[in-house]
Length: 128
Image (cartoon, rainbow, N blue to C red):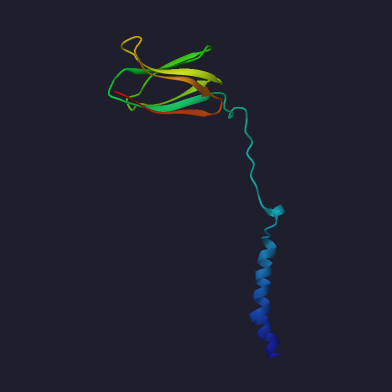
């Protein structure tokens, strides 16, 4: 009788506790919870963007980005960093120009490809 008591106490009861835990928390694929996220048309990107940085000691510098359909001009912030969005798919030209003196162009990027939902990185440009 004492052998049965020891067996129940040290073997059967602990095994019953372990197996009941795993029965309540099976790891089969049918019990794995997944979360899906629905994307509405409001969150779907409708434009493309460009970003980059300009290192210079000159002031009053602007970006001019254009193609046959549109043109966007924007002054450069003091930090020299820029992020412009609102572009349709297409191939653009971007010029870094002086705002003070017309027709002074510091740098020109040709055939800049902009796609909807993507950011085109143009890197860092140094202007002396």
